[in-house]
Image: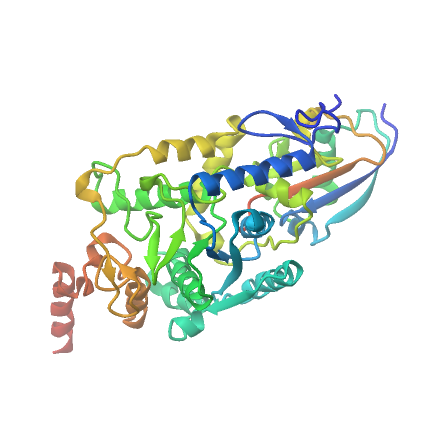
Length: 360
Length: 101
């Protein structure tokens, strides 16, 4: 059967049907609609005021490539300046190739690029080194747990270096759902079925002010969307295709170990039957209410780096302290969150007794 | 009865890694009893082009969820999906949406 005619220009043959509206559009009309929607999300959510200096998290992947391209198109209208910030986690055989893609993009778009390396920022720790250290825990590696937290800290540092007032990332509903669902599951297991909805302070996606810079992740508790909030993975890929964007699309070497793979598979199967599944889940999540008992405490400053933190150490330095002590799972899990770790808790004391007895 | 067909099969978004990293394949499909539609093309691809891990590309008689199919730059959803009848010189592009960000 021949494809229908574009519902917008009524001239060209339609190239796709949009998941939300079911509207059939040709390539150029779809790209225009996509850009208009991002513009609307940014303006209606007051995400990037005129005069803002925006650090765009750039990984070389499809989401950040599309985000940077669209923002570059919209920058004159929004009256904002863009700076690309890329993070080098130190993952051999993966990140180097991705950074090469970011460098090509920066040259093509004539945008300044700053690369922040974990090795420089976190006392020599690369993700490859973290992977070696957590490998022997017997509980399975937690590379993505570390990397997500450290990357956010690195992005904040990169934004500070370029004098940014705002940071944007190419975060999409599916990623938010994966993270939220995964965190909720882990928390339930650790606490043994909680009442109310628990959001961890560092992963709630709250807008964070670090050195005066607003970190614009989607924040469901405050109804503040990410720039690509209302798009889907399919539309991002199609936009990149029709705009002939060059991006890097290999899987991180540690990704197969991540728990989020299960959520992603489930979401893909849901979308096969209901194309708006991801967006509908975001809609529901935005309307979840937090019971007062589980709201995060008022934030202060990390005693190590000065970043915003709801405890003595920010999550990044709490994780690194665990690594330095040879106990990488310290700071992963609620019980061990309290300031000095569980050395002073019942488990820590019991372990100390065993050690002392063994030393005799 | 289907005549032999010459089509271009492309892979992107990381899907090419399952095909020796080669993105574009100029393919001649032999004449056969059954018509050449996407369903039969997938069977042919699995048998003749796919180098590793078929479960990452194919699920049942269709593509794995998360793989987009464009026929001559149009979403296969608009063209009948698996039932689309291939024409000579068609371009079929498979893009994975599953990697990275």
